[in-house]
Image (cartoon, rainbow over all chains, first blue to last red):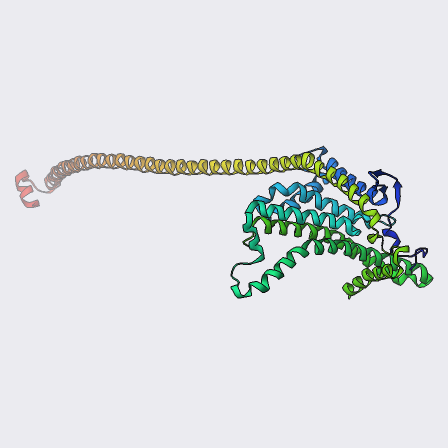
Length: 246
Length: 182
């Protein structure tokens, strides 16, 4: 698995520059990663522009799709956070659509998966972590620190519980970002490896081909599931910030 | 099993990258030089998407969904109102039907009563008339009977007289004959 190997499973994650750009000496070139970010938002925008072009009481298919996604996220937010979560709905909705389309576009061969890069998922997770912490302190003041000491715990357990809670709180952005990134990375790598087996085995390649088809279905499921998990965990963290007593 | 495989695949290139050192970054994810560009474009694209969602998609979608909800609940309300109205009308209709049948029964019974009364009266009148006629005719019959008896008596006397006169010289008087007849 060296760089010139034609079936190097890591090759698909390499970032190549399309247009060089620099601001204050920092390299911010337009890369294939940027291109697929643009694709993801263009796909989202296309979905909604088509879905909203003819707004009617009885929706057509595209309107149905956009309303389904809207209701899906709105219900998720309402179930997890309640009515207080309404203010954060645009962010949660955009987050879901962005990750969803990044994951799905990445499943097409010869494309690039934006969410397979840890820095991207960590940017989201870090932003969510910071925002949730700030919201928690803004809404509850210092009372937000209660989340580190759940009610009903005997006082002598506090020296044990509080560090554990602090560590688990601080590890939230890491687990959130690594979960998405690792799933994308591993799934796409395995797909590539098995695709390589097909080529290598020649006539016997039909066996990994069958496996590849099954795996592709599984990866499709994972692409949707990970977008869902990322979003619902964001909702849960937000709920913790708004209602630290629970 | 899949989890272990994933860890393996995730860790393997990392360790190789570590082993190879600086000359080749094994995993593109670990190439720090690409981070500023990714973050920069992520911020731009995601902000664009966020603004699009916030300003364009969500207001329109929510109004459409609200309008549909309103329309459906309005329609349901209308249907319920119409339903209750219809049941009211049905009740009214039933009431009317009941009262009408009661009235018609009343009319039928009262007309029956008057008819019976009339018939009774007619019967009584006729009975009286018939009785009168019967007594009258009885009287007549009685008279005629008496008359005919007397006539028979007279005729008998006459006959006896004429028969006796053929054979006997002495003609008995009427009183004598009637005495003998009785």
